[in-house]
Image (cartoon, rainbow, N blue to C red; front, side, top):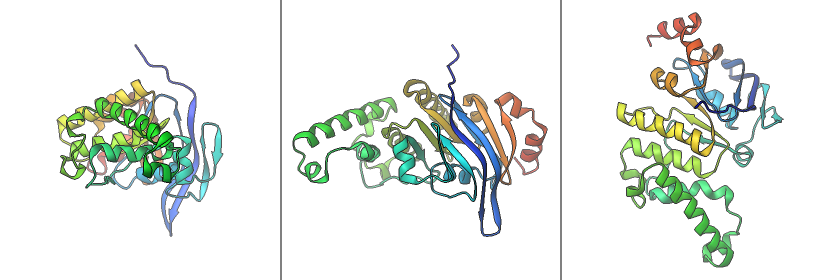
Length: 260
């Protein structure tokens, strides 16, 4: 059964970004449709993470606009991005290593907590009921990601592959409509990559989350993506289905020309 790809949820138009005299991105345009897995690929230094950083408000592009769910911005603000429904995982894990798995994932619920800090601290009345509901949601994510056995374990004690899973869980706790994954499989062995690929597809299917991911493993990209955009030295050199991109001469030479 093929899944239903919806309308455009994210539209990136003519984004250019420079740091000093160095151009990180030049006139990049692409879109993301609801419910798809959209990959951004390219050799090292192609501008992939810079592109994600423009989408989630970490960088301000000098030119271009980003439209999310029909609203257009010349630049996004990180808090605004999160409240609008864009979640993000990072290449370098930013987890709280001394905190348990469940408490790390709970931090992803912060945006959804309505009761004031005083009531939260006392854990009374509405605040207690609200916390119970949030914990229930987090437990569902823990079950979904198959990390029940580590619920109370400090994250710093977990192997790297499981830490990456906790990072994904924390992003899912925000209930994002659009999830940006920055190299979710970097540093993983074959088995861990297979697990993470399965979870990415399950998130896409079961939560209905639209996914944009940066990934270096071309096998993974070709297996799980609906469409692929290819960057090289900050320029777009390819855009289409995995099959279209695989046979694109410019893409082939960019990869072969940089030792990939």
